[in-house]
Length: 406
Ligand SMILES: *Cc1c(COP(=O)(O)O)cnc(C)c1O
Image 1 (cartoon, rainbow, N blue to C red):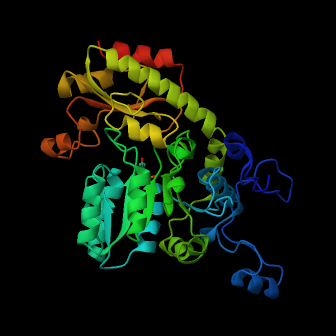
Image 2: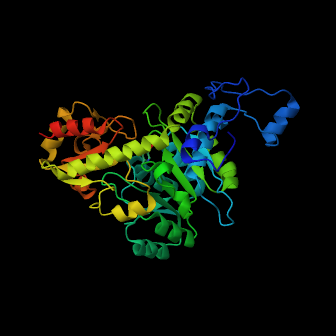
């Protein structure tokens, strides 16, 4: 199917980005080839000049990678239009990881002396990159509470060097959501480049390009792949010329390229994105409602529950509540550890977005190195459990959680 932009979301998940294959293979094969040949000197000149399409070298792309990239671009642009009514066109570049995609975006848009404005609850790796690596390159970050749009505007007024706004919603660990429309509109009115991390929501639940952002990034490791089989990332941009020019250059020179096998796994996983997300969301809603009523649970953070402080924001910009939640066990650190040990069905692992339910206890794992004071300030109390609700039969998930809490 060539770019049929009138097709439904699930049709695009299944067929979008697929190009006819020279040996008539049904699926695009894993192109395990580091370089590509030319029929003549004349042809190599034309391909190098970009006058004739063609692959040159594996770090610059290959047909298995192209299919994944085109599928993602179609999904993020699904039903969106530009101001003259034409369908929105996007370009995606697949990377070796979500971190590689963020790095290309940041270094492709910022130079020394410029600043990033962002919020507290970013993914840990993104936060560390911004806090520990970029200042050495002369790029500082200003961190503001993005729930308060007036304070964001005050910060923008006070510092003319802010050039980029970085958004992530929903975000760990309390599933905070920020208002994409208000923040992106504000950022664009101050001439900023705006980028949103859409990993938790996926384009099925949320499309940041609707709110005029310049870039969306994903860790494809999570829901887009959906089966936990490969680390990957993607950067999607609205300015096609910039994506094809300086951003492609940055991507190629930093060397964070994907590979054919991971791209194949990703394409295969994305075929079921829509139906997987429906099941993730309905399971998560049922699990959240069960936990909310449970005696051993002090608090449930799930955006699909009306009690979540950002429920209204989430429901305005997301189709559904997603698969991620966290909840606080009443017994503190000890009950967190005992809960993890008692689980029989759910998997004790970090990461998210796989078919199986993943559960972790941040205080004893990912955040063990963070001081208790700082951890609690981030909303990670001693008894907090983080969960990526999977697609098992929901009564099995609930039964496992119930027995692990008693
Ligand atoms: C996992 C994750 C990343 C980083 O992606 P990797 O594929 O691990 O490099 C970035 N943002 C969010 C929200 C994530 O969950």
